[in-house]
Image (cartoon, rainbow, N blue to C red; front, side, top):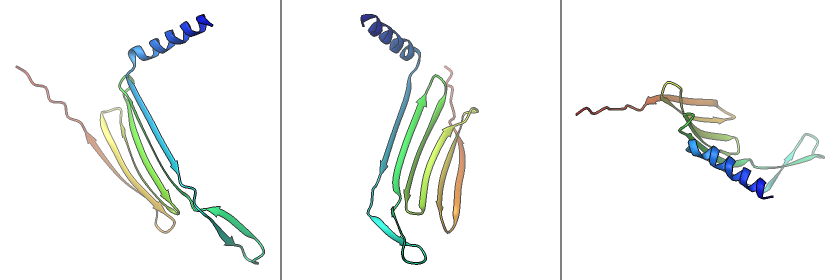
Length: 121
């Protein structure tokens, strides 16, 4: 048992020694009231819950350069969200999107870069 604890502590130290990474997530589902849907003959009914949720996550790993985040929410047929990620060339991709059953999926994509200024004495 003591050997297992020593091995576990050694693994935790080895993994965290060189990595300074951050990851988080949040998911929230709203359970609403059931609605009755009639199909054709009136003898059959389906019961379903109005779809409603929101979630978000974020990853920042300075060792691998993996940086991304997303937030999305849905209320019935409307879905909207946002995500961003750091691309290999250093640009940040920002995407705002929304979708519904009438107009389909739409996304607005923008790129930005972080400028590094060097000050010489």
